[in-house]
Amino acid sequence: MRKTKLALALGDVEYGKRIVSCLMNHYRDSVEIHAFGQELDLLEMLMKKESDTIETTYDILVCCDQDEETLRKIPWGKLSQRMPILYLLEDVQDLNENKLERSILSEEVVTWTEKYQEVRSLMNEIEKRVAKDVTAIYNGGELKPEMPMLGVYSLADNQYQLPFALTLGAILSDQRRVLLLDLQENSGISQLISGEETMGLEDLILASQEKEIGRERMLACIGHLDKMDLVYPAANSEVISEVGAKEYLKLLELLRTELSYEQIIINFGSRFQGFFELLNRMEQLYLLEGKGGLCQWREYEFRQELKDRGYDGLLQRVQKVQLPITTFSNSCERIVEQWKWNELGDMIRKMGSVGDRVGIS
Image (cartoon, rainbow, N blue to C red):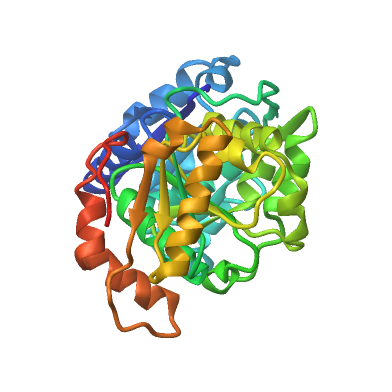
């Protein structure tokens, strides 16, 4: 994937160091950073060449805390014709009171956003302005070996699949970029997000069946829950079972390649055509374990079905999970918070790097 080339002109040196450090820790595979610590360096970069080299060198210019003299000298209009400009303000409301900045940083030329926000939110602002390119759809339907995927499935008590998947994602997202794909009908995940989303899983599936898709369209289908990303649920849950394994594999490869996810968690629901084929791609499958003889019968039949279908390798990757005794509430967030910091969360953290085989039982 082509890296986004960022030109950073951040007058606040301490803030600049923190931003660069966070970007390098979490987005080193997707961004290339060119930092200009001094205003004179920025002016030299902008003024030295009047050709198209600026346009071909940087994808976007991100600025903040420039003094009045620098603000006046920079040819914002001419520069904005070559690349997008994002100006960071300590308080966007202050722009209405600062006539100088308001006259220079015209909304038609320069866009602005809050300076103090999460790096992930800032990257989303950057991607909105850079991701105008059109991405060719991956047609192979095969996942690369380095694509780690974790599955969550239950033969009983499946109302706790979502809290477990969220707990798993919350812990893993402390160290890597994580995406949750919820294929469980009416899982309740829509209650955890803002409700302002206009696109989601349906749109991604339709887009993946086309020959090309804009990254901006992909980003519109993805929301955020703390540090973890998630695909907004489908408005019509029937579409989940109408899609086969090949389409899901194509979609997953597209997301991994273009949006640089290091871990994808799939919360499985009802079986669809190719269900077992996609299940077999999981590096680990967390099977939530119920109590009682009937649950044991169901698990026996499930394992026997895997064996009959020739998925003996998957049998070795099934990790039984017996959810810890806890005081449940009507709040999914509270359940996740409890699990994250009790023995279940400790066991997940002991998994270490992706690929470790640590059972949870």
